[in-house]
Length: 391
Image (cartoon, rainbow, N blue to C red):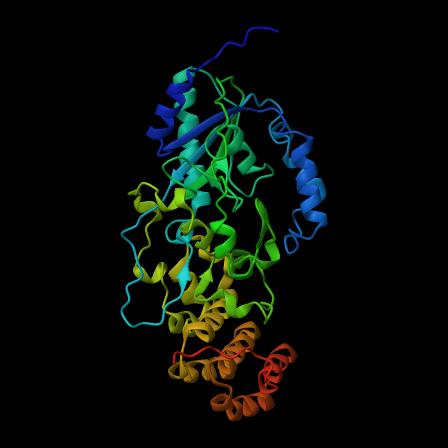
């Protein structure tokens, strides 16, 4: 075999990455991840574990296992990560009824931040090597299996919750890849360290982690509150608790993630506490312009205005009280989005069917959208799981 000439030392790559704001790095070759990964992804698709993600086809899955399909001259993959754990930001417990947003979406959209910092690293690498480097800057929307690259590069290992666990950071890490046409000494993959622990599987409220390392996407709270554009299945709504965008439960319970080092990166800090723990009444009463103003530049925009109003209604149904029936009734009566009106009706029935029946009966007469009428009918027929109240 010909001798490979390294154009930059591995340790220097990490140093340059840190200068670019990328604190975690791993390096692997640009070789295919192998047919075994393709077979696993196709099997997951055929078993329905990726239902609801129509863009993730079998062809895309197979394409994604070979980095050279995206970057034909690729020689190395620099897997990068930005840790974002900040334990000092907590629920204010101020008496305001609040939902929860997954930590990764508190601050600036990570897609923009990762690409910006990877472009900086790209420039530093070119300056260091004295040559033009053909590169691709990839985040999770690109056709590459991010976690496979992170695992093979030694950045971290696959946890049983399907996330990459990084030493001293757990899974509180944003992942990206810089695919380059230069040879860099690859790192050795880490051995998985989850052992017999199944805390992440046990804590999942919806049972979305159907087995170790297997996620059933249609049941995942993150999918339901972000990607799903239709009604959330009624039988699963009570399990969403206070989450209005994403879910961190399987991360918070993990011993490795729970022991993560704190990070101070203002980019991922919320502008206000309301961008981490948003008041649910605020989410229900804001119009679309206010939604865009409040969450522009964050990943929360992916859920869209209608989706966040829907999610807020479900959260109120789960953690609210009779004091919240008035705003829910106003939502059923006048919110422009049928998705919000229907879920608000469900929330009224979940909090107190007896107290809500008369108002919902009147609202049904005026309602023109069949999906909302169907939601109201389900409530009035008693087909809604009542909220448990404290003795």
